[in-house]
Length: 143
Image 1 (tube, rainbow, N blue to C red):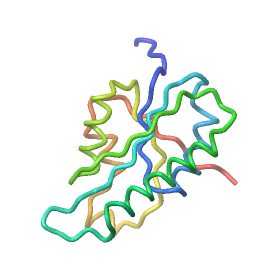
Image 2: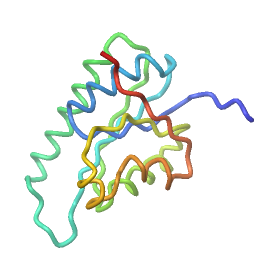
Image 3: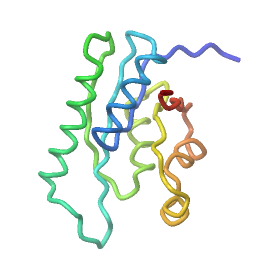
Image 4: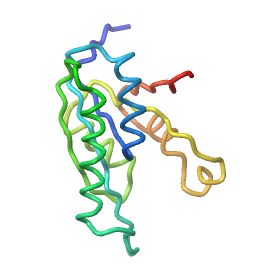
């Protein structure tokens, strides 16, 4: 087994709550000095109508990044942020990981229900099973 140092990670974020919870877990598990590429994917539906205007979706992405920065304040992470558009969330994450040549994809699974997972596909499962890069799954905070 090779010793693979965590140099840079891709951190896909869905919203402000996700940013808040993931930042808490990052502080516990990710070494200081790591380059963190925060990614927010704005998903386009082919042939469908998007629920919000592009400027509103961009503003939500910026709020997500702002929440992440706020909760990582005082850390020594080298934080970058990027918004990407795509029709497939998981494929867009994989493309970003490849483009940025990150060491790991890091995420914290969000709670969902089985019916939604069955109908839409389980994003967390796809991130783990369909990738060519190592994935670090952060555990939820214990209260």
